[in-house]
Length: 123
Image 1: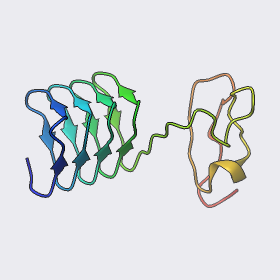
Image 2: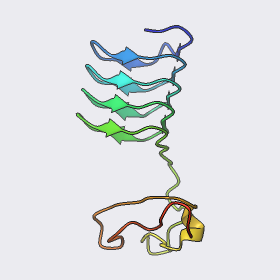
Image 3: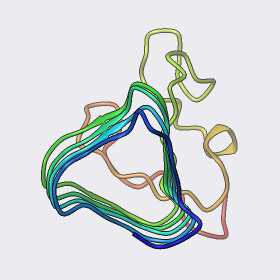
């Protein structure tokens, strides 16, 4: 493991886990053969499965479970807000680009989202 990592004593690491510089892990579980990139934070009660790749600058907050063989791209940020302002009161995603952020590309196979919501550089 590289230097400058902050790995709390309560972190459970599987075998052959690779953690690159400036990672911050506490109270979490990381499965076998997973790779944690630079500047990644994984909070308590989060779980990363086996053979996952968590790219640099990702933030995995409390309560998130990532299953086996998952790739998390650069600067992905999870939230644990059960009622974010981007959602309507019925739980469907608010597709108004002003609420989601400029330049956001969002793709999902849910009935409420059928195509990318915005084009980078436009609202």
